[in-house]
Length: 123
Length: 107
Image (cartoon, rainbow over all chains, first blue to last red; front, top):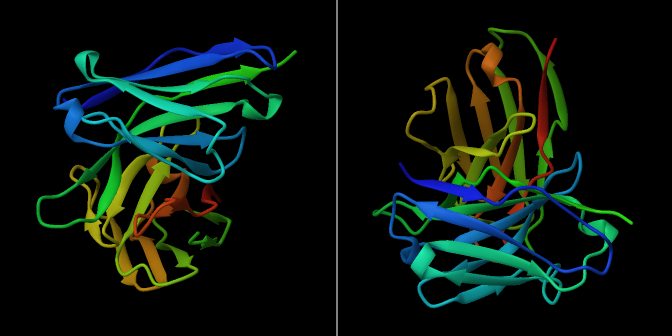
């Protein structure tokens, strides 16, 4: 079974750093983009960007460029998103998802998704 | 960036109803359009990709259509398990963007 399992909920104060993880299993982790999606409390979905674990190529949404850093460790099939200095406004659920396509098309979608990591930033 | 809009933003319907949700893109995206269902407290899951291809394991009462800038998700006969929020998402280019969601509630 293809699966993404994310690290547990975190609570931090503004200005603190944080790294959360997403571990894949059931497939060759290095061959698929991992995308990150933010969901603010009670709100919709925002694409943050993506990383290709095979060569650590990254893409950032302009809204998140400079605010977060993506990383991946192929040896343990794990992707990360890191913050150097959290803000209250970073309080959200963060999802990772595998970018998937079929063999007959270049159209991609997100499947599966991790269960989400709730990040709470509060003084 | 490609802006995605959805209508309606919320919808009350009864079990057995036929429901249609519309998604529009700010520019043509061919059929690079996906639909996701999100239940409260859970991660989204893909229902339809490439505008009209049903994801394996998704009930056949779900269908998608459209191309260019206008797309629809149809549920032919609502079941109790279908009450959730539905998002469209374009995969035409980067940054990927989602619609604001349509919350489907029980009447």
